[in-house]
Image 1 (cartoon, rainbow, N blue to C red):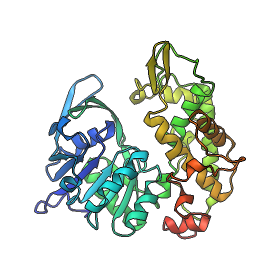
Image 2 (cartoon, rainbow, N blue to C red):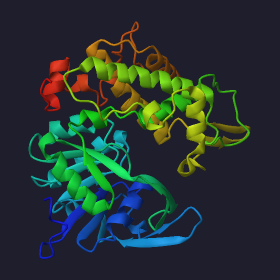
Image 3 (spheres, one colour):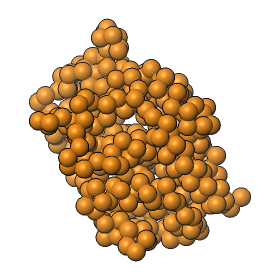
Image 4 (cartoon, rainbow, N blue to C red):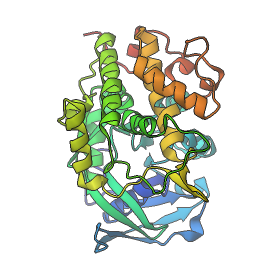
Length: 388
């Protein structure tokens, strides 16, 4: 499939996007610019969508547009002949949608996730085994915000490069090369998918910030304004983030038998070794400007929106997965535990039982233990690595 997008006489590639949110809308427009591709969308609201998606910059200046070939709420319309499927859905929705479209997916389809963290590889491999190729982007390809749902989107900044991993891992270079042709951004391959699963992006970045903001929250607390997620970043949030990052890096070193060089520390990624440097760095990122903390307006002021994707995705399908791998190798994680104990108490969940990470509300999550990974050897086997 690698050269399918570049050979002039070759048929057009059919690509289906799952999810019409911020990233999904931008991805539709980007792929829709390439006349060698056909891009479709599976959505519950097909009548709301235009067949042309317009892209604007942060100053509301039109940049370009892309064409959608088909929009439908019927999986057979857009999935059955799809060569590539890319999900931009939240992790807690992905498995539900996957169950609905499973019977429409043909053998050999490439099924990808953007971003690829969230544990989706466990569920995908359980469903498809070797029937399909699974791939995931380590991070999203840019920052975007829907301008008008189903019609237009703001492009707020692009990555200069992307990293991709696959299951089976032997196809990572082929998939990365193909996705580079499709998206138009340089794509590199990772040695194994665990480098994507453990990426310390939203699962640590978002959870640290939210915990620092709302750790003292009660029903009688209100804010007089919406808080900027990044522009109002604090040293306290940076301190928590760095501690979580240290725990993750400690786990990567302890696994030993898997190449996890792609799981870069956030202090390296943001070139900031101290909380103060981290705060200054995060506050200075232009593409982050204007992004708000998830909050709801009430009569007395603003309160946290615990139903937002930041909460429903990044704690149970982000930090919980990192914690689960740490448990498998026997690493204590005091800061990660502190955050998850707060989240379970705030949301009425049961994650810990007498200090052990084995509560009843973990059983339905996409955690490695729930799919038979109980030791380092299981991890090595699942991700197709060999001992170094």
